[in-house]
Image (cartoon, rainbow, N blue to C red; front, side):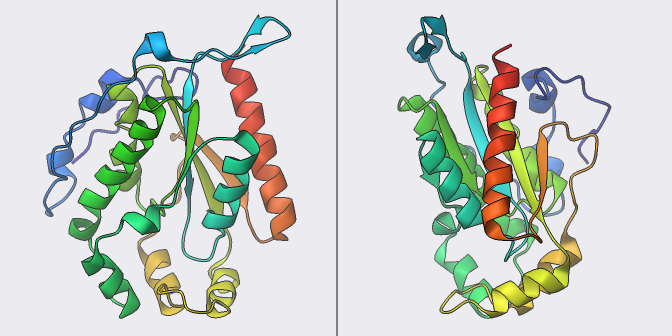
Length: 238
């Protein structure tokens, strides 16, 4: 099992050395993610924007928009990426065909189905940053803490990376109604209940999480998300 000793955070991040000590091979009885090759971000290439002659943030930010089906991950992530002028990685696009077939048939994914997918998303985010982007927005349900911990390994590869989860939540009946109104999406309403059955909402110990109630109109949700993101960025520049 992972060790969840009380972490000491820096700018809301669990230190890379702490994350690196987690044994992903023991995340559960299912196979661990395959090893991947990540190109660390070169600190010398880290763009430091200037405003009125003042240096801007020296960090690259990964924004993980998370939550169960129907919470509005794609809508919020698209708004953030456009507003921040950073790349957007739609997590669903990186599921292997076997995963999509299972979800379309109403069969819940297992941990084993998710390990490689989570690793690919982490790699995709880091690749966007190593290509010169100052930040990247990624959608991923990240329903369990151990799924989030797979992504939390990212700063281990590049110490100027700050990782943030934007957790979108609402009562199950609200999300059931929204998913039921979708047309042509492989994630059916029956999948909402299966996701809630395994959902592990972020705890207070997870300091890198921004929590947003999406029960309100989506205009208010995206406005709140952007406001909290900008506030978080401002805090890292102090």
